[in-house]
Image (tube, rainbow, N blue to C red; front, side, top):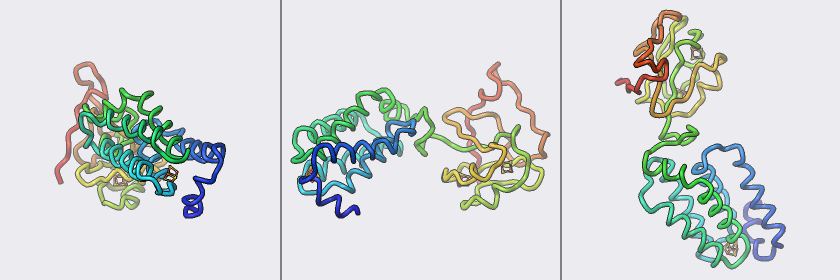
Length: 229
Ligand code: SF4
Ligand code: SF4
Ligand code: SF4
């Protein structure tokens, strides 16, 4: 299927190409992070470019490489300008409408979400908590029932706990795969950005951990403290 698509774009009508690109873009419509949205969109469209002209083949690849780096916390000053330039090059220089339509969408994402791109690059923050480098998982002491189901589910063995204990995630081991969030029926495994609640440092009996207000800020006032294995 992909190979057929690779060969067809030059002969395809503008409408066919637009419909294909828009469908690819729509797959990310629920993604709240524009950087991740662009990363996934450029990854799929680079694979279905026929690769005949350099600007489309290399341009979409570069858009993908740069957005991947930004989502990994390796964004650099000037990245937004480079992404915009490449998008413009795609619009102007692609030899069929496929590259042009991809460029129009990536330029639109950048223009509409410049602030979010800057936060990822300069402040290493993903407000939507989508980019894995910029969030961590924690077990809410108030929601955890100590059922112990997440321990078996974790491929990294990053969760400490036993029956009737509030479980604790070791952030040095957790790779943020999210599998534990699916198995937890209490929605006790949650995401945090730069600030996380005050948490027990090791498993303690369910009901024994009380969140203490800090500086009037309540549960969310605690700074992240990484546990050492
Ligand atoms: S713009 Fe060039 S490389 Fe891209 S799909 Fe069209 S012909 Fe192929
Ligand atoms: S985090 Fe969820 S799955 Fe894990 S022990 Fe607590 S309630 Fe059970
Ligand atoms: S996110 Fe994945 S690695 Fe991290 S604690 Fe959950 S299951 Fe384990």
